[in-house]
Image (cartoon, rainbow, N blue to C red):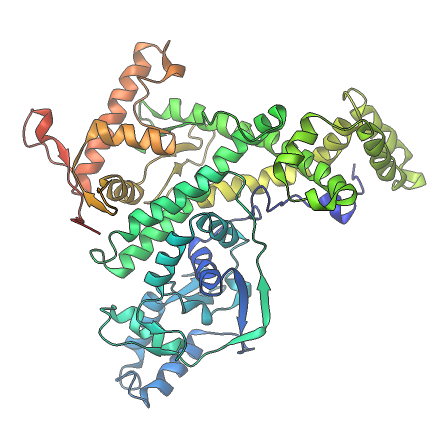
Length: 520
């Protein structure tokens, strides 16, 4: 049975709650579009070039720049240069699939690299908007990131600056874009709104600040990889928390509720690990909340649509809308009765049986608002659930070295929280930083237990759950599984070179990261 919804009723995405469309996300595309917004203060722009970029276009640029002495050897070593461009300087959609492979953009190593991109192959599905909103909560941090990303290039004169210590890949990218201009008429301003989960947004900005503490210690390509992983990690955390908290906020009528979200991680990543079953069950509980979240979003959208017509000045006030959901006005039932009637009236004469079936489906809901929301859920809920799973898989970097989630190909080995080696490396680099008196950070070593505690307290991720309230009555097997999980963490830290057992003494068993910051 197909329910005929209007265009407005069919819309699910609401940037007051969460900006992204639920699609499979490529985080390199997200960074490329984020750099554009940082460069142009929240605006999306297009270049004056109207064609489609290819690897051959980039090679042609390089040959022209060779005449200006920006490059040398491009003509003489074309195959080698093309391999360098392909592997180090460009992002390709469907990389490795020669039938479908398309040029998407330059690698996001610098703020200006968005100038060469094919928009249709470089879509971020509004994930960049979400990250930009989150960064805007801390303008000083956003400005510091802007300064770092734009290092070595004069934005006014459109030329490279000398003696900036940039790597060869970044210098090459800047030469490629230095003569390109944006089309001013194409600028689209991003709505400037506050993130729904403000504390989570501030946490992302704070982690960016910690990452920038290493800007003089870490090579730029490694920093950009860290930035990509950190952005995906925080998009995933934000979404997990929103799925968990939004239905509770609507029940309470306010955002001011306890944030008690947490997620169990299986650090070993092995299909048959002792921790696997516990982590799978926990992830199943997380994802089972998707349906309640989707219904809560439809409820929020329905009430906001009404506010948009009745009190336009309040249409972006999320606290006002949440209060209306909890405490609907006296005429709410009449308004949504009218909305239901509009939907029923769209059924044709030969669809009378479908209309009656829908009315029977909704008859047990407590009021017309609940009926209307259930109607939207029935028609669009399955679609949003399907693509919501794809979205969370991609921003969680599923089954990669940066994974926050892993999963097998069968029900036996379902999705579960994880801690990929690259993600672990990044988190260690962030968490070994301690604030200094007077500002800045310095690096201090951590014990394994301190690292576990900080990951739990800062991000809500559980590695050792023996002290968790929800595992108070756990059996012996569960406690043994958490012990194995801690040992798996130690092994992973050894593999990435951060941890060495020099003695049985706990004071000597410290995590020492790859990069050190003495002051910043």
